[in-house]
Length: 568
Image (cartoon, rainbow, N blue to C red; front, side, top):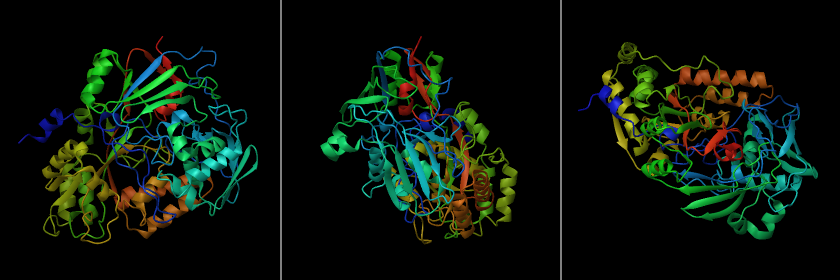
């Protein structure tokens, strides 16, 4: 049997984010209650990070318009758009023209969002030039940007924003962010052509996150052509226009030369083609048939870099961790926090980063939580590799004789199976037996998306991996993990519930951030609901025709299209 160390050096087929295929785009199912946020979707999608969440501003203080950073904006005098940018995507499965259909990655090129993020992750204006929150936390006022036109020439007004918020927050929506608009919405009105007032039912400052996810659609056009007509030929105010779409084949954009934003489109056309096979995408890049590819294994990334192709980081890093659902229900090993702690100390994260990920990763991997996330500080660190401490913790816990069953079952789909085998080797070295069950993705999704309710539930006392991009603000995502109403269900602690509610109701930014840090420390230091592993930058491989990514590449690929320059 191959040793763990040999396996570390040999394994390179699966990675994180663009260094692999198991990624997700944000929360998924509608919450069971207003305080229970949706869980992220574990599907294989194009590797760019979704438009992430962000830091709140002080209540009642109006925000400033999003500036055009001198280091990132493309000058409007750069000349007319030219040429065709070609991107080979691994998966169209999470794409749509309508933002209420699961999610719409293409929408970030076609539409503008109500709010957006700056480079520090602060929420700033986008379609709304600025916004404010009343002192009681109930009234959000958006001042809509003037002079912005849809692709058909119609002006964008407050009526379009009201329509878009209502459409996005409808019960019909399957977008994971929509429930927050729906659940905490007293009224949405336009007080004039350029002012929108959103009345909330209760103070909840994280609402600015779904406002960032709200894409602005044209009310008059949408209603004239109907929902099906809009999805067949969408229009927005974004830097690129819809040109054509061939299902399961290609998506084509053309530049919006009248785009209002500071970054003007540099490419006349952008073509995104569906190429699921990694080897085919690599061959296309090497032949010059495409200019950008993603969803690449560590080996492919490094091979392409050695051949002279540039690795471009886009979006926030991808994180890997292990979850412990139903610990309060089982009599198995995960019921004891000392066993869970031992499983953490048994892992040599630096060795995994240096060997399996060939130096591209580093220890980390908290749940949607990294250096860029609101509330982060440097006290959040992974455990050191200490197998002797792991063995002592297991002995103190009476492991294995005290537990029934004595073997821990780990469910994973095939995409993360190699990494899980590496962890299995570390755990075996300290005496913990983990049985890896590789299941189809629908089975895996059912395990992570259903909170266990009884000891007989399939996901009570098991463990499962979670691999996903970080977010600028992980408040809603963490409710799934840390609260008793969360669908991921790794906590059953009323104190965590109370700490969560206190954090989202506090309107003072500094105080809210402190409340959140306390909850996160409580979760990782006391509850041990999640075991962080590693984090990896989200990389694309770039061909020679493509120059700098000068616009919002910390968000996602589609939102960066307007800022991708030609090579000089």
